Length: 421
Image (cartoon, rainbow, N blue to C red):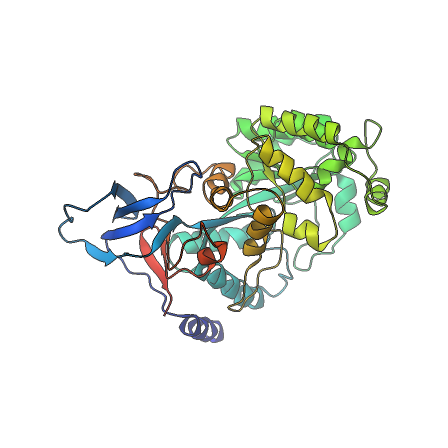
């Protein structure tokens, strides 16, 4: 009861939130930001039926669908809902689940009201995430759709972690935190992870290049994605890229490829970085081109890097963009529980100010690319047949990205879930 009262108070304080079940909605005369940077924004209208974009028309609207709720968006802009492709919603203290959910409920509402309608959770407690994934999909909790990973790492990593996460016991022996060695049954481990509801396997640390490849190939065989850190230690970034993973996180870590030797020591490698390891552009480009060959997305987390004085992240991300590697917007940062600015805005601003991307390209990274890296074909762009996860904006995000994070209205599955007063 206490949790319910707090959540209701939070919702009323933030603005009008809805779960209106209107089958047909017409959004007319808005400037449509497609989600694909190659598509020029232009004025048009959207017809939504049963949560799906039924039609997209440009120019003067000649006919209005009978029975549709019509919303005049003259002077406004419509974009796809945003996606943070690197969050952690279930790595905090879970020893008191009811207390943890109070915080998570507030974070999820804040994400949604800032226009974030989908997240890729890069490893955490799977039962906790499964609860929220189901509750959100069934309209029992307000929040972005959640797609999550199981974390695979070597036994040494989990031994180092011990029982460092409160509410988690016996790390390394669950379907979502799995210790993998040469003796492990990788096929069974991935089957177990799939049963826990994951969308991808996060390949994390303390794994050989042979195991990275085996995990990647088996994940793909079982219909899951392979998401990896850029450096797995002792394996180098090139080992990860050659394995054909779907995404590599943390652009700064690609610099470890230039350290001599077939393998790298985590302590010695970071020591070189903090001593000012200079980026070798030839090594960088060779690695980035290998990523491009495999259509591997880069999840650069430049905001995270800038806050930790990792200067190579923006240099590598900028070059990746020049080479045509698809970039997604992940933060790997803490989200506030109150109505405060969110780190995804900081990530997107850095991609424009320091990495050479236009606002439309960054919007694509936060919409269409985010959907693709998660294997989602039903969202990320304003097209017929896509899910109606949409933001109605008061000003032009092509001119100012902050407009995305102050949406007038947020639609999720065609339902108005937030409207700013």
